[in-house]
Length: 320
Image (cartoon, rainbow, N blue to C red; front, top):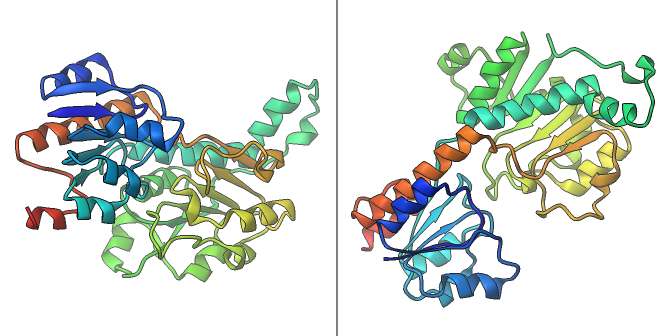
């Protein structure tokens, strides 16, 4: 098997050796700077491990020997699954990792924004030490609206209980036993937006969730509310959010993901003081990196053994 690691991922020596034991390995530890460079890397591969670069249709057309893609992350919206199906390529992901890392970053955003930590850090470096500039708010007793009660959403809920918060959530199928078990209240979207002091997004990017937070939704939020997005950039209408932040229609936002990544240097978000920005690092802890790489390599190992796992396009198995 010809195995290619096609862009920059966390790959310690022990995992490199595991892959070398499975086939002929070629590792690229930088992001390709063009589609042509990416295709050049994966053209002869039978198995490709890919991180953030993705795998578009034209890459499938160029990789005639390709049998399997192991995605080094949970999200796979940057992989053309339709093209994978047409090419008969199995795609596996890492479905269960970084729950704690992502949930903890949510509260890093929330606490920094409520207490103006990010502003205070910048101002003190400018010699501004007056305490009156940094009056903030406590998190205890506030209401948090959690959109998505998957593994990450549930971890956010668990942490929120530690702050004695009121917790609202939206679901298509309200379930009283789940409400009781999680200690939350299921409400409709309008109620969540109107009553929450913090709205945090934990949904996958699908046609239904794309721009689910837009101008109308932001208008319904409290002027003192904070929006946190550690899910996918396109879940939020970025232009509408920029306008809401500029006009102080909401208090602030913590954003780890963006409609276009890397975030362009001329993005208006760069100029706003009431937003905190991080470069898609919610998953990024030593513990989560280790877990992600372990599962990603195991996906390759199991495929080579003929026992596939974590397949995101299972329909392909029926045609084989």
